[in-house]
Image (cartoon, each protein chain N blue to C red):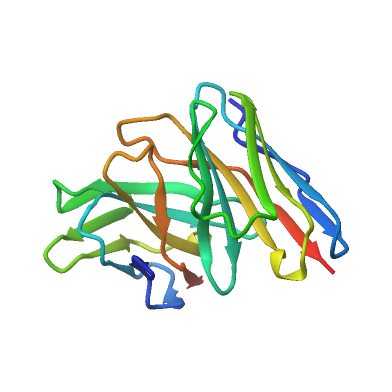
Length: 114
Length: 113
């Protein structure tokens, strides 16, 4: 059973460029989460979806960040324009809704903005 | 406003001894708590969980204790092994909001042979 798949694993870009991170959740999971990990703030939730619908985007830092989930098997997190302070590891996670199902994480995308 | 706190950034333990990782929370609405383990260049992986209606849950070498009155939980690893060396995150869920988790800052555990 494939886990959560994220691409790319590493992304290096220049300030001002658009960055798109991709995620394929585990089949059958209907909740999807985007987290960001930094030294200063640890793991913080950016946005999450249930049945492809955004439920809470209060963690999205600013309007430069946007996320979509066009179908049950794909989600993107876009940063436009990117800034050096966006450098972090971005994780996607998925779970089954309801009950006490834990989140399953991908291996993350390490973003470096120079 | 950090609702989940792990006050020890790191812990060093000898192989075979007990490792105790601690976590405090402030939100009384949290009803489910989890521990995740993270190796470098990998995503966090689920380790063990506990519901707020329990005070202890055990799975092999791993035991989680919950003290609701103190808003405190701990993870015990006995006996500790070098392969347990990783970053451990405490996480909490509140209500039924689709499994959204709030994480602590993490504790780096090093188990020396």
